[in-house]
Length: 364
Image (cartoon, rainbow, N blue to C red):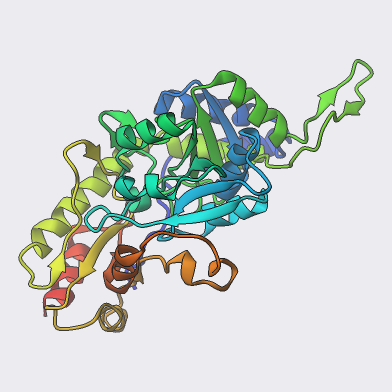
């Protein structure tokens, strides 16, 4: 089976993790926690990074740190993995679903303003599958209406918008290091911000709002959260981060090769990359149009029969039981993309021969 997207582990992971074990610094306190935050901060060029136990926790932490809570509204795309929507509900706020663009699959900025009410407190764009949202246009809307912008960059580490790393353009950015992401810690996430006070607030909240008194007792002045990452996983992350530029180059080269082989195939629409964007191509994502000989789901079945794993686009959240009653705008494009979208094998370790095999099955 050619897998959809599996981790690439080939650097200093074992050495750094072994150091944690040998020194007994395996929990949420240790040098690699601080080092991972520092190195990640330098990589994305933000002012503060706060490591978390997963990407969902990073998003929830961002919402809490910004004071978003009961009865507030947050505008978010319905075509996304469910994490950002669940995080909105965790803090007592309500998601309001906005449509996406057909070509880039990301939040349609032109449809945001019509959904803003006096209850709206934030916009949560998702850089889905790696392509950035048009952040300049979105930030203008946010500034006009005095709203926060929390970037879900969990699928887009390494992607750029006008030469700036996604996740650093809004008030807060959130990343994931799940096993299928560009770099992994097995499970883990990161919050970044250019507001140092906000970053310190997020770090304080993530560590149970713990204050150590002079006699070493722990004092907690407010409700806190245990969103910390163990030193073991942070060590793994430091090793992975050392390889990230090479991983991105491989992903982008593979996407170019897919485009080269599939562009001329009738009924296949390959992904675009806007002139202001640099896509990390976390997953290679294409559309199956009406003039292709199979439906999207039929193609997924045929690929599987040929030993190739693929996946449909994320099912729209507004169709799921917990969120059917949520407010939303016109979601025509969201519904269409779900019916047509397919993710093809995208691992860093994917070979050209495997890409050729995938494309040959699609062609015939």
